[in-house]
Length: 171
Length: 381
Ligand SMILES: [Zn+2]
Image (cartoon, rainbow over all chains, first blue to last red):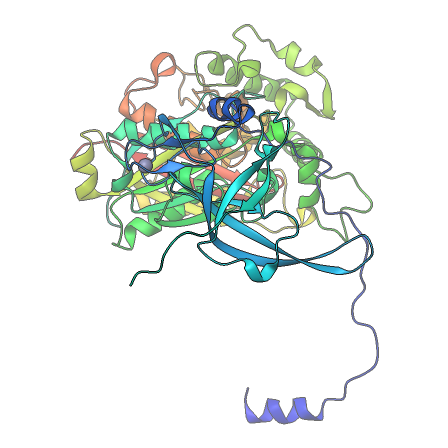
């Protein structure tokens, strides 16, 4: 800004009048149908129904994905093998969410990323109700808590129960 | 400009309601393009996609297409326009000298959302949206009538373009099945349902599910990868005003200027004789005639006299063009691929004899607001 303009703009008095007008309009699509593949999920969902966990493995990089993935991005190929993974897992990282309950009180709930033993990826999960936020830490051992009657879906694992941490610190 | 070659390509079969997810469709297109050139994921140095948040049902939608599009831990970016525009970004990436292989892919899946309704929201919220039902189809009606009136052209000439393209599409195994019709007549086109008079259903390129991908490489790499590279000898692009009311709809100024830029770069003085085949992104039958004139392939108002069939004076859209299926964000890129196929002699039943130089166009916006023109040439050395 030149000095002259600056001087001019300093003299400028702000007038009180409306310069804009807003109008209500829509900005939405009436609907969106998300289409996704299910064929590569079928063996996984079948096993879930039997309270068993499997992940798929990429033969290019040997990584195991849980939940199963359609494509390994690193190798740009489809993972082609199924491997069993265990229902025990460790908390990879966590965040504290604040949720209002029915009485309007704010509750603290940890939301966790768990890594099952035997796989290379983590999944988003919740810890058992009643777990104190202060008890959550990275590396916390947990175990999948199944629904009584699994239906073959990701919701079959309701939440994760805490396990006793028998890991010893390295001397 | 340094030489940049198209070294691989792939397009998936077009469907009105594909029996597989968008994620897998992208994978099929990109993986197929790499296989076409005999390359691996490791060879990719940059990835440019053409998609649209609105069409993908996700915000910043290239977040989700990373793995299947080849962008995993790679230099990756997105263009929210036609795939032919994404190729421009890919070309610039290669010309920067930092990249050895660019993957350019584009596509969408309109079986998941109402395409023509979505395009209502392309219009201006203060001037156009409240008082008129203006979307891509009605806007094209303005355009078609303006063109017909200016040069005194009957609707049968425009229907004729739809007939030619739908017949050509019947020879293209990747075209949309609903668009393929080898027995279609001008009367059928004229008597099909009115979309917005004078535009009838069969004059409209049907939005459909599809993804396409091309691979670009600088000269040295291109010659290592394939003995049949297709070279980019010219490109031009131009944006017209947003307001339809400010444009002369009987022509397409942005296409004219884009063509001039591309021809200057490719040293083309006489487009009619220098170009062997054209693949145009005509969203509506009449747009093919307007584009033909703006590209200098016919005089103004004379496009109807040009024989543009596969064996004709100057074949236009031998693959069926956008009329053979218009996957949003992929159509322009498919035009480029079809031009490449013609130059490499890989077009099968719709191959035009002796093609060495082809032009391909892409467009975006109401009444083809923004256009891009590619001039491609063969010749291995
Ligand atoms: Zn892998």
